[in-house]
Image 1 (spheres, rainbow, N blue to C red):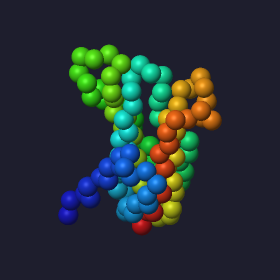
Image 2 (cartoon, rainbow, N blue to C red):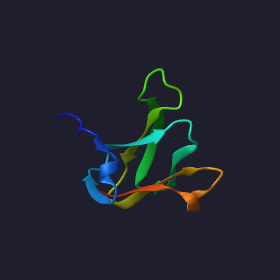
Image 3 (cartoon, one colour):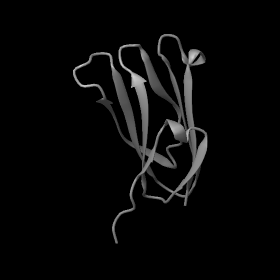
Image 4 (cartoon, rainbow, N blue to C red):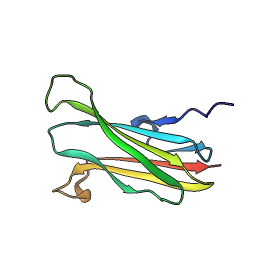
Length: 110
């Protein structure tokens, strides 16, 4: 029996609730504009339910400095329960209260 495929969440999944099994990996992919100072910052995750396995940034426009990038976070569901991932898109020096975008998803782990 193979490993269950990972779940990939994108901007269109904002505000939804998803169900996964304990042990399954979850990937969140959000677009950002490089060179603007804006970035996706995680507001909260509950380490009892989700373990952050990694974070990376992929350039979407090769050879173009300051172009669009894809921010990717990979989590693993640890145990049954309900948790939420909350992220805000803002400039660090302006603070979260000046966020221009938000991403929220509720995760039910079986």
